[in-house]
Every structure is written in structure tokens, then in C-alpha cells.
Image (cartoon, rainbow, N blue to C red):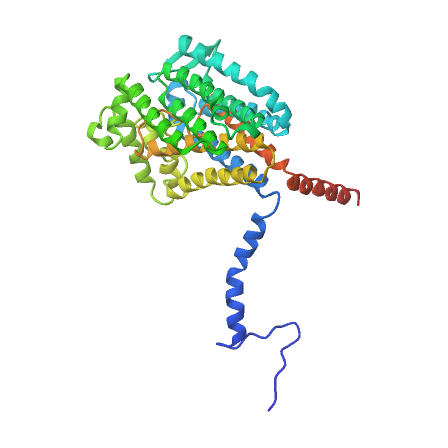
Length: 420
């Protein structure tokens, strides 16, 4: 019996049903899993995930602000690019600020934490008594020709101050008094100043930051049950002080029962999402932005995104936020610096909490309480602190010992290749 050799440079295919074929199949099918796991275990993974996800969200946000605001801008300013031009100016200010934040050492951040908290309190106090009322909320402060929203700045200041305080008390956090004072009274004071301006949405974000930090430092479980009870009572009380806000809360379960009044905005948000389908109508093809959907480029930009980019676009945005949360939690888990751990968790609770509230109100799962979608909604007062916060996370990730060594090694290799 003769055998035929394979031609040079070719490989013999396994015989059908042979053991060799069965061995190759499973290994090839699971090779991608091993490669993905290896990539996720690399020291610079968290750094690149934070950088990439933040950049993509900012890019998507600019595109959606251009699309969602074009009709409003043309009607009000006779220029379809007026709103997105302002957003680009804030981005031009925010990116250098984020870069500086990523380079600041934890020692400098701790030094800046308490002054930042005092400045935030002063701004919130001025807003409570001298602020400008917009859509029923007195949460804007006029500084000459510019109006800012101090509560957005205060979110970053509160996280820095609370993280610095807890880091200084790291060895005494087994004592409940040390856990509570001065962070809990300090954040409650800031929340009270926001409640005075009837800004229920920001007050909920402040409380989410407080509860998230208390959970991280190990506060007892009974404290959370008590806090949630008090928070519910305060939220109901604040809501009852405004007929407009109370109407929004009572109509969010079924927006169509008061379609022409309180349910108009959430109902048209649902219309936008339902017409988007799987892949959307295409960028610029939204119909609801032509006047039916209020706040299309701010609080309800997620509805326009769903209409133009479909289910795929909305899941992409949510996935990018979850990517930021995953990478940040990895940084907080691996760090040996308590300030980095607490600051990272505080920023994650802040950004993820806002995302959940915003998406929930657009989906009519939560009442409409006026919370922007971070990095995506229009507004410099919200965009600038969010970019700085992400700059801090990126800086924490790149300064981790293994990540710092990997970056230094790459710089050396790049220098050698240039010399060669």
C-alpha cells in the first residue's frame, strides 16, 4: 500500500470524525476567550478602558447635541450650530482641565479638597438666595453674562472632600462617630442648600454619593435602612411643594393619562425611543426634536439618541458607562491609597447614578426630575466637572505601580526605536 505525501508548504487536513479534528475545534472556539482574559489582566487595561470609553462618550455626545439642538438653535438663534458651538467651547476648556487633573498628585488633591468644599458651599448658598429659576428649579447662578449651575461643581468638590476626610481617618473608621463626623453633616448641609432651590434631582445625586461612600467605608447596615427612610420622606415633601413636580411624579407610571400636560415630555420621549427600532432612523432624522420633545438636547437627549441610533446606540452608550464603572472599580480595588479608593468610588456613584436616573426618566421608569446625561447632554456646568472627574480617574489608573512601570517601559522602547 502506498502513501501520498502532502505537497511542500501545505498542511494535511484532519480526517472527518478523527480525534485530531475534535481536538482542534474546541481549542479554536475558546482561543478568543483566553486572549480576551489575557488582555483584561494587563496593567494598562483600566487606563485604556477609561480613556477610550470617555472619549467615545464625549464624541457621541457632541454628535447628538448637534443633531438634537439643530432645530431649536435655528428657531431661537437663526443658526443651527449655535448650541453645539457653545458645547465645543466647553469641551475646549474641559479637556485641558481634565489633562491637568490627571497629572495632579494625590497630595495636591487632598490640599485642594477642603477649599473646594468651602467654595462649593458658598456658591450653593448664593444660589439658594440669589439664584435664577429655570423650569421650577432655582439652581442657576448668574455671574455677569454667564449662568452656571453650582450644584454640578459641588458634586466634584463633595467627593474630593469626603474622600480626603475618610483617607485621613483610615485607621479610625471602625468607630461609627468617626464615620459620621464631619462627612455626613457636611454633605447634608450641601443637600439642604440644594433642596432650598427645589432641585430634587441634584439632591438625590448628593445623597447617592453620601450613601455610596458610607457603604465603602463600612457603615452599619441599619444606618442605610434609616437613611433611605428619611430620604424617601424628604423627597416626597420636596415634591409636594411644587405642583409641577408633583404632577410629573404622579404621571410617570402612565404618561399618556395626562398626555397634553404633565405627561407630554415623557410620552414623546417614549415615542422617540419606539420609532428608533433596532438601528435607528439615522443621525439627524429625529422627528421629535422638531418641537414635540422639550429639552431634546439636554435632559431628554437619550430619547433623540434612541430615535436616531436605535437600540444599538442606546446599548452602546450604556455599555460605555458600564465600562467606565468597571475600569474605575478595578482601580479602586487594586490601589493601596485610601484616598484613591474613596475618590474613585465617589465619582463612580456620581456618574453612574446620574446615568441611571436620566435613562430611567426617559424610559418612564422614574419621574422627570431634570438630570442631564453625563458627557452626552448639552451644558458646560455639567460637562466641565465630569471631564475633570474622569481626568482624575485616568490619572489614578496611570499612576498605579504596574501601570506606571508599563508606561515607562513603553517610553523607553519608543525612545530606543527613534534613536535606532
